Image 1 (cartoon, helix red, strand yellow):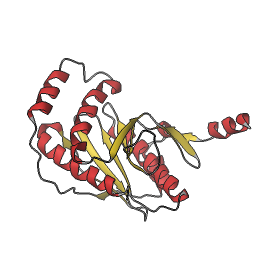
Image 2 (cartoon, one colour):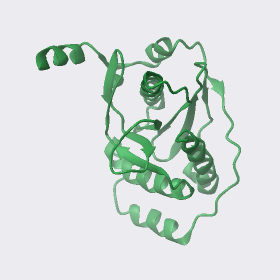
Image 3 (tube, helix red, strand yellow):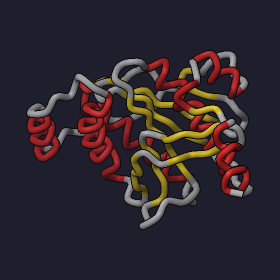
Length: 206
């Protein structure tokens, strides 16, 4: 039985192997809609500013894993008003015909990971197109997993290299929207959009 399960898993396409075009075809998309997240700028706290300054002691540029230090810090600040969410790093996701590990997965705050999965985040060094391909497929898998439990909810995603952030929303009707890039150069606006975004994610817990 175990051997059969492993064979089945090996036949599934990995998230990381999807090209941008393949991801669009997998979701049945021709284009992405434009998504404008209306938000008010959030003042950068002294604590967060000091943390960002301390992070400059680390190399945040060379590798994708280096970017996660900055991503972690920004996500933590963005989640400040979403008290029921928890971030899981590197969890395994498996759909009907695809599988792999998400860089980040956000779900309800508890000691164990359980559906619904309200947001996936892909951390990429600079290749936003590849990040979007993986993120879109992972969002589709989350939607499929929810449907297996009889839940019809929107799926959310983020693609970021730490300095630039793009937000995605997959509606239950299959339509996908993408935001323009928001950068850390306007940290107050980035935090404002993150908080609105995470609050949208949190609504899917009810």
